Image (cartoon, rainbow, N blue to C red; front, side):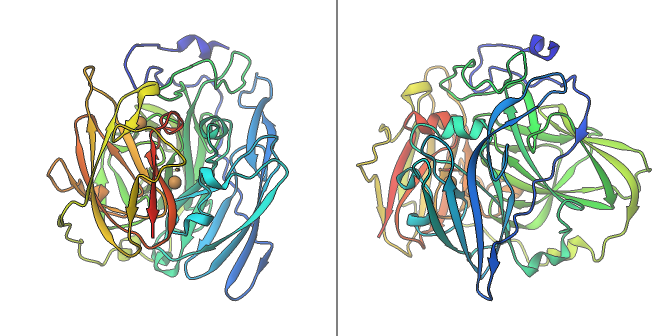
Length: 455
Ligand code: C2O
Ligand code: CU
Ligand code: CU
């Protein structure tokens, strides 16, 4: 297929394969199914999630690729987690290798967190209990077994978690109509259309030339409402993505990884590093029927919105923003962490991951400020998306300055550029052993991960 002819292989780090436009005919954007609970009581919801091997045809002319999925062939359903409820999920591993179910961004005890210590063997199952007690937001789940996270995610294991409550009723929230998810991932394919995890062989993270939105190439979505809420997830293994609109107009960001911003923020370009999320509003009012507007990543359109007959929505989404902006002040720095290296030599504080070593001990209930420093090497270095399990944090400072307006919401991952020092503040509510790591999945696998024990 001629899309394979257009790879641009350079020597730069962190993005040696550039994105290209697909030559594929466009397809309707797949909307992940909303998972129906097996059972609902007054206090609890019960769900079942199983990992499966599957196959999926990505290209009209291609073969079926071998894939992995949750309750299906590729990616997974959207699981709703209402705040104040207890959610039980029966997790089943139907793969022929160990996996785990990590609830990225959920503030829950380490025993339910699904990190590398909670692998589930082939054919085994386990019920997790998630007491949902945090702000509404767009979270996600993915595997986290030792040594196989990057490949399992690459082959399709990723799903959506929506923490919900009534405070969102002012926002567009009709799932699949005016409130849509976009899991965006770059991938490499073989000439005949299979996912190619091995060819790129980049220890700094696998990057691809083809973008998928909810698992599909070159997608379209029919807009039928004045405003559309899009929940963006950078589900790439290693690529930072710069999102923009094809007409050059600004988009409006309303939420970060773990909750709403205090105020909407208008941006021409929105950058997300791997595992970061953002909710945006795109305003189509006044656009003529038939008008097409594309969402681009790194300047390459990947999802095209076509304006149909627009209906007014109830209410005004801007009413959801009534709070005065939170003042972000720095408190004393409790710890300094240094990210360093590339390839196989990536470290945090000079160390590589050791499951038998606890790197940081903190008291339950304590609030700490951490300064994350990305130390440059002789060649500069690369951005590391730093992620902490079991908490949502605030960014206090980037190199001594307040964070940009669109980073003033709850976060669980922060991109730290070469040479940069970022201060974050978090409260440790939940106990026992959590991971913190670079969310370039290959860096995490190469040891850029530490253990935090909350006692
Ligand atoms: Cu997305 Cu260790 O996590
Ligand atoms: Cu996580
Ligand atoms: Cu990294």
